[in-house]
Image (cartoon, rainbow, N blue to C red):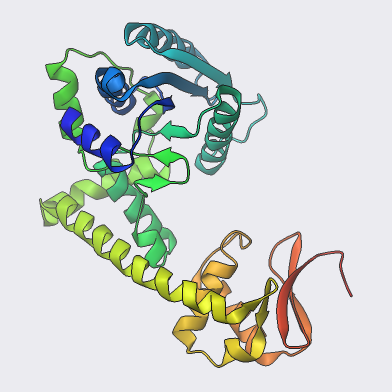
Length: 312
């Protein structure tokens, strides 16, 4: 595992950095933090273990914070922690939103531009299954990115089995989150109930799904290059040229819209992309709601965003 993480650090040229390590005290983050501590001197890394208390399991959280603080001292790292607001909605989606807000705050406060997260190969496969069930496109099939902006995931090619083997060989203790056994959370349901059935059908399912992810990433790279050219052609002064847009094939239009509305559309699926495309094809001077704050407006052959109160 140490050699794999070394290759990762070299690939992304991570040296002489203050590194925030997303840390829960669980097996994945313990193994990642320990490996980084073994490489810290060689790569001149200052490690900060960042623990976010979701405020779901008060008693367990106290034990996890104590464990995390002690582990940080053990590997010569700093420790940083914050707690979610008392009235936070207790859903997987909200927890993820709060967790990333915590990391963003940590980067600002600690003057760092690198956050390491301990997602592994099993997480990658579970994420893909979850997205397929919910409905996804090529981008969703790419599953968890190895790097996204300031977030790095050095364990994505390492299985959960390899992680436990590494922990045992190095006599490393870790905490177990009791909520990981609760199948009311969809990812736990996939892990506990669905993936064992995959294993019955084909014991090599994880490798095959990983190959699917690799193929999706390659396809996505081709699409992104085409999109780059398409945006240069269609977008003028932050507005889409409608005449040029409707001249494109349906496949190109849909992919272009997927990219154009990706940060604006709450429910990002084929049905809603088709709805927007139909609107553009059938209107020359109108507007359609994209979310609570924005309309997509067509006027004088241009398609652009306006705020909901802007009826000009």
